[in-house]
Length: 303
Image (cartoon, rainbow, N blue to C red; front, side, top):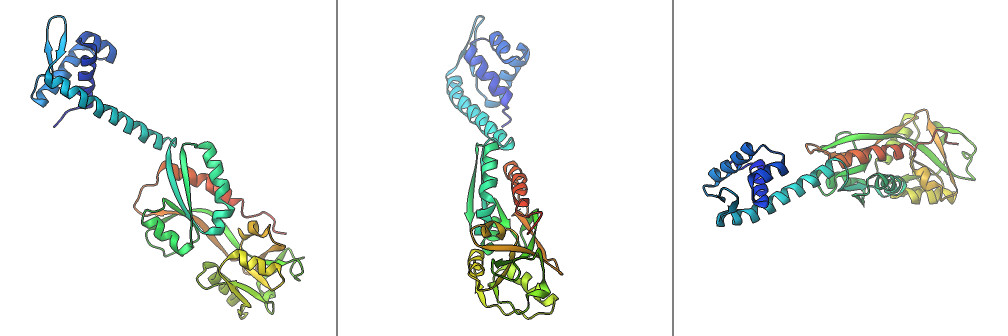
């Protein structure tokens, strides 16, 4: 079937006006073109839609039947087109973001609030899960995008870099490192270490730092959450090497963060989406806002 939108609009216009000349003026179509569109539609359907007289055209039974269905179909199509335009112009939609708990707490609330201020018709849903669950959520379609740090070889995802995160030393106020501006990795020898468990990507980077300066790494404590490591450091039970964004959580503890150097070790915080799937305009716009707030997590001075 080769029925066109123009033919349906022409038919509905004539049915409403009851006259070809009035319909042509309302639709802004030349009357011969309007008449031809209706004739083509009748030919395609194989039925007369109008009974024509010298003064007026009247719907046939088939025409009345077609008018109801065609009017609803055109209305649905216009609604669908309007909704699609809204999505393209970022006036409506939904974004589901997966992120690890600490990043979800320190950057996403502010980014979401700023984004909603610009795009009130777009809903942002947050799923705070472990890093190992984020990739699966994104590749399975349960999340539109994911925030975090991921191994370089992860399959099925594409990345947008948001910020570069440096490893820092976190210590309590009574620590000998408290007065320092920066700390060398080689200075960490002999100090009790509060480390994250081996399923954390941060742990691997900390091990690299100790190996680079040829120091043995023997954690006094191994914990799962960054906030737990900060609490132990606050209690004077040791020092901890954590990402820069832990500074935000550190505000609630009596601890200080010091940049670690020689070597300087960093990693990329990225926004991921599934490979082979188009990124919606809403996610692209959210990525821009999120990058700005993520970059605020890296201080210019880390005294």
